[in-house]
Structure formats: structure tokens, C-alpha cells
Length: 397
Image (cartoon, rainbow, N blue to C red; front, side, top):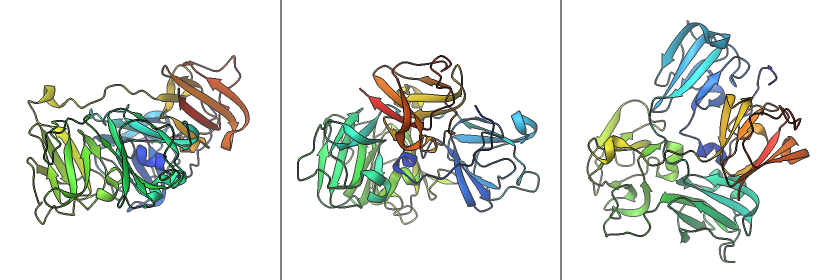
């Protein structure tokens, strides 16, 4: 990998929303100002730090993560670990970090195999993006807005497609299975999307859908209005979408508990909600910016969240699955920075699960030579593709 200072460009796209709970946010200036960059869990030396050497002044750390700053490159010199956001580093650390380690603190981030891949052509062809459970307005859909013709559902999910509406309201069509082509009344007319966990139709009645694995949130009191069902996991304000600061009632099964945060980033003081409420009190109603849904102790083996496998393509900056890494769901990434901020011309090894196909391109926007990968590779020495990928497509066959 070329050891050059990386200047990353912030890509405001739906892909970023997908990983909103899996990274810390770095800022060049205090009070979360200046240029903004994102780091997923991993170890970053000075040439890998997207914020740049000696540039960090503030950062946001979501619930369940920690960040360790090092004074020198290669994790040397003084160090300090933070488990919450810092609006302005003190004089000892402001513009002083030369390497960084980002870690989770043992909290599972949800089932990584549950997502929906949308395509702009029928029969699962053309431009594609994968979205995890959440609420996506028209702005968050990006190139998918009014440009969806088919989709594939991976996991127990329900998809609500809002016709000619970008704010997740009005007329919608609901699906629980993949669709090779949408009817003319829906094709290229989807302005916003809601994806929620689905229990296969075992509805016993009532606001909680009769399922012990989901908490259900409503925009109006008495379990009315729009509803969003969430399995145990961590949901930032971006993940809640239009439900952010718009929750008025909640149904909670006996084995779950909710931590509600007034901010969007799952840090700071929280309020615990232990039972269903037909109308939240004044301090909570329409004031919840992010939530954690978790198992009560003594249920389900002590808080075991769903998931466990991470069925996604993983790319690495060094051979033998080492160095900086990024997990990619099916979709197209016209630049490597769109691939979770992975550096350009740095891909040196790749893990490809069974049933996946990856196409590497020499230039951005899928230009130049291409190379197709269907199996994991510890290196690209013999194929002459080491440190040469500038864009990438991921397919699930």
C-alpha cells in the first residue's frame, strides 16, 4: 500500500447511512466543526488516518465504541482512551494525534445479514445499493430515489415503498419477499423506503405484533401513526430517520428494555423504558433522538442479540487479510472512498463469501481494466492487481 497522506472526501450517500452505527466521527475543528471523516473499528497509522496527521480536534463516539489516541505514528508515545464524544480536545491532545485505534466494546451491532438490495433495473440488474433496517427519506435514497425497479430481501424483513412521496408517508406498497420487477404503478415511483424486521406474519394482535424479539415505536399516541419495529441493537438518529424526535408511544415485550437518548449519537444520559406506553410523558414524547433496544438480564441467554455471522465482502489494505479493512454489502462503489472510506489503490487481499461475485476496476467510475473475483484471495501478486483498484462492484448471485 502506498504510504501517502490520505485526503478523504465526505460522501453523503445512502451507503453512509447503512454504517452509521459502525464508526466514530472525526472533526478537524472543535465543536464538531471543519472537515468531517469516519473511521470504522480498526487500527490506523498516520498515513491511514483520514483526518490527517496532527489534525484532530473533536470527535463523536457512539454508544458501544471507544477510541484510543496515540501521540506518535505506529501507536507509540502517549495514549489516551475515550468512550464518549469530546467537543474539544485539551491542549495535550488537540492537533496532536498521529495514530488511532477504534474498537467496539463487546456490543453486537445487530444482524449483519439482514438487508435489502435495490436495483434501478428489473430482474436485479443495473445500479444497486443495499440498505439495512431503517427509515430512508428521498434525500437518503440518493440515486435510488424514483429509480427502483426491483429488489432482493436478505433476512426476515418487511419493505414499505412509498409512492411519489419522499417523507415516508402517504400511499405505500408492502413486501416481505424479493421482487424481480415492480408493477407499473410503483416502478420508478418510489420516493422513500422503510425497512423493518418481520416475524413472518405470526401476529397475535396488539401493538407489539405478538413477537418477543421486537420493540415497536409509533409516531402518535395510542400506537397510532407510522410504526417501526426494531430488534435488539443500536439505532442512532440517522438510523431512526423520520422517527428521530418523532416517537410518541411504544410497545415493549417483557424480555426487552429500551434506553432512550435525547441526542442523535447514543451517548450521554439516557432514560430506561421498561414497559409499554400508550403515550410517553412530556420528557420523552417527540424528544427521543436515538435508542438502544436490548435484552433484559435473564432472558435469551443474557442479552444475546440476533446475528453472529457477517456475510459480506471484506477488503483489506495488506496481504493475508491484514491492515485497514472495510465490509461491503452488494452494491456499486464508484470510488473507493464510497467503500466505507477505503483508500484508493490500496486493496491487497479480499474475503469473498460463497455466492458472491466482486468486480474490481482500474479507474474510478468503473473505468479501465476490470478483474472478477469469486473466491477469497490472500493477495494479488500473480494477477497483478495489488494496490490497483479504484472502484468496485459487489454482487450476490
